[in-house]
Length: 164
Ligand SMILES: [Zn+2]
Image (cartoon, rainbow, N blue to C red; front, side):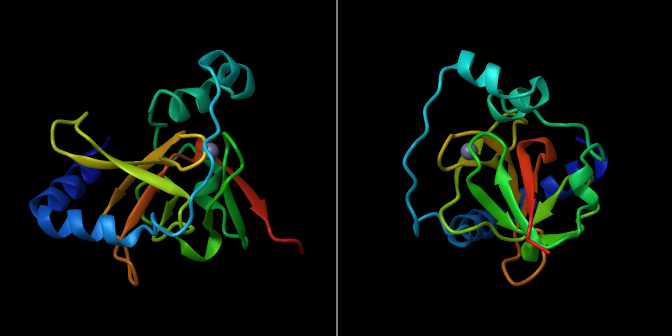
């Protein structure tokens, strides 16, 4: 995590009560339920690239500015690279300047969240509602209308452009 993100996270933490409520009210978690897709670690290793495995199954973080999806501007849908569940639409993608593909909203019910204390201060981790694959963290410094920023590892997504 670079200094800019560190500062953003600290800013979010300072607003903690607001942050907590908005994150949990805004992500549309309750709308849709997906059946769980369960695979063994061995199966996932076979199906995913090492980089995908590191993010999706081990909660790794790709280096910023490495994903070609940072510059993806076409209309379409972003799917979980683990199970192809649609997570985001291109309408909610925005340029966050962080070096990771960023979205201000998620398709209803597509992700679940948990508190993550890996960096000592709490962050809200989110993962695919179907396969449980880790995708990123959600912060409260995003643009309207939600004010949320889903900071997603590009390697964990597959982009499906709309038909021309
Ligand atoms: Zn998935």
